[in-house]
Image (spheres, rainbow, N blue to C red):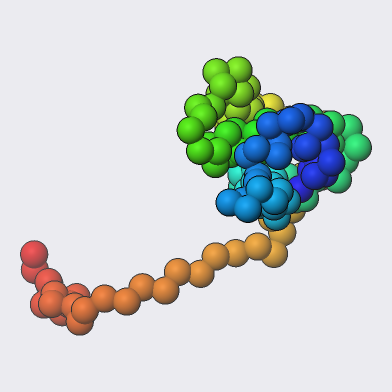
Length: 142
């Protein structure tokens, strides 16, 4: 996560308790941590194309924290019963996703963030298929 539960509480203000209260009226902060973690994972999923994660560069952390809070707020409102996601939150979350897409595409940079090092990285594909019908010997002359 790029932020704290305390900052998330502060960002949601009094709505935090109503969103994260269980049926007994007790606030369940683990649900809020789940939303923060999911939002951070969405961020990391986009930026790991270009940068080593988690990003620890002090120059980028305020931006990442803001994005983490914005995406987590959207998740929080989506979790809440009977409320719709405020238009302002939707607009901000869309802007965050656009910025993350720009980073993944290489059109935007995170200041100070360490570039992903692809040295020694590889991929393996395992393919399972049925026995070949046409083999090289059978295809000669075609």
